[in-house]
Length: 397
Ligand code: PMP
Ligand code: GLU
Image (tube, rainbow, N blue to C red; front, side):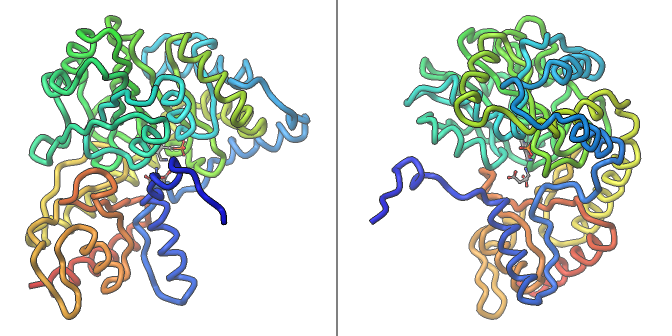
């Protein structure tokens, strides 16, 4: 009998990936399911990036590469950090991995001993919790409700820190809420962070370019906490490169070297071809992303307008990423036919079965009153999805 490890048995399947699998299965059965479950740009990778990959293959960049990434790629990431974020990371502070997901896992594995506490503001991205648990860490959730635009303050962070706290993990722009921390809000967090010199903060900035109303601000810009911050980013979202698998960190040298050590044993680093293609993305002027960002912005308006017409649905005003995270708690206690809605899981299942729209329950992101809509889909698809959701909700009483 195969006995799986306790570590594995304690792990939840990724809810985002599970929901997209489920909708793929239903589609394969011939059902007309609209999937707004996965956070994946519906655009294609720009041609100049694909061309760089083809050239890399022709030039035989097909062998093992340096574990933290090719020197020229890390040099171009270093320039990107300076150009876009005013952050100074030398190449030896940069580690390139197979997606931001692995970057986060590397950092957690290098820092967390069993029993260490990791502060995670909720709502959070699904994988943070499970990665921390695998490392034996204890997730300490700090709830940030919709009335606070799902953001926490320095005072709240202060309150959560104990002598066991090692790390905090958060994203800005945030998956799943789309909330964006302003410079002042990050400064407020930094004031708390600097009071706890052994605290490291992982700031996940993978949605940095998908920001509709303000300039992206990085936590590491504040010199008094720079040595305590790991900046995570990647090419999946801005450059529509989810399948290429490349993420990276800018970090204090000790953490960067430790991540290289972990990665040297686990994966040896990400694909040589992807790395060469990513240089083209890093060196491109981010203004080429304008069209994509403006498409996301009009989709956000479309989804928010439609939701505002649905009684009992409450939203924040998401400034970035491509998600809306509506509060649907007014529907708890309602029913239609055999469907009884007690929580957001029930509502998502109902919307999948009755409206054929796949969403992800807020439970997976640490807020059981909400569900997540990924609006990385065409306006036509979104209009139809919103029509179906509105109609299914109106049947509940
Ligand atoms: N962080 C956040 C907040 C995300 O939404 C995602 C999902 N793509 C990741 C990290 C991981 O991205 P990837 O591994 O594709 O680089
Ligand atoms: N990050 C995306 C999401 O939240 C992609 C899925 C995943 O990596 O978990 O849907």
